[in-house]
Amino acid sequence: MFPDQLIGFILNPLLVVFAYFLGSIPVGVILGRLKGVDPRKTGSGNIGATNVMRAAGKKMGVVTLILDAAKGFVPVALAMALDVHVYVVALVGLVAFLGHVFPVFLRFSGGKGVATALGVYLAVSPLTILGAFVVFVIVAAIWRYVSLASMIGAIVVPIGLYLIGAPWSFVTMAGLITLVVILRHKDNITRLAKGTESKLSFSGGTKR
Image (cartoon, rainbow, N blue to C red; front, side, top):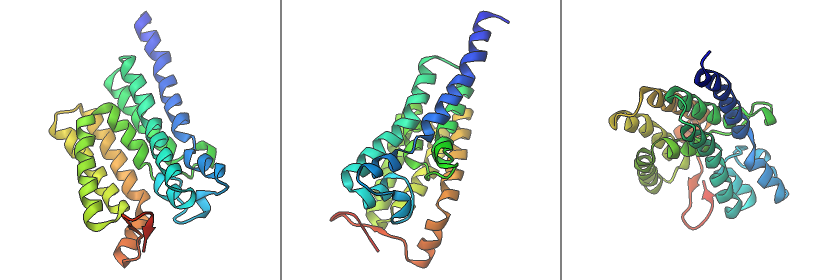
């Protein structure tokens, strides 16, 4: 086995394992406990930024968003800096996302992964995520449903990656992430259909 192949044989699995465990860190739960609350027992029960904001305040919600995004950005940026194969970069991004959704530290019951996916995409294609963010803002401003805006924004990403000619491994990764994001929003979809989903309030917090 050639030295470069040996390095890749050792490095690639390490990157994937690192991505999973970093993605598994339950940032929302940790920050919530600093405020004496558990987001899993408040509001929607989700550990993501939106529910942490409800449970522990805006500041903790914003910090959760940033750190959850970092869980996706850091391993992907590291993989790209190490110049590993594009397929490995895509796998690292997917695994970091799945780490948040199915974290070993919470018995594989995690969040919806939107913020971590955002971090992955910021490393892979900032231009694409900018387009998805614009769509997210428009949908959120018109209908005031964060869940709806998140799902539509997630759908835009693989389409955007395809249109800019990104590697198929990235398009496939984004497609799988989008599928999981939508599946994780199944309860939100039910509430949206019933008209009981919480709306974003521009005066602060959320409302029914």
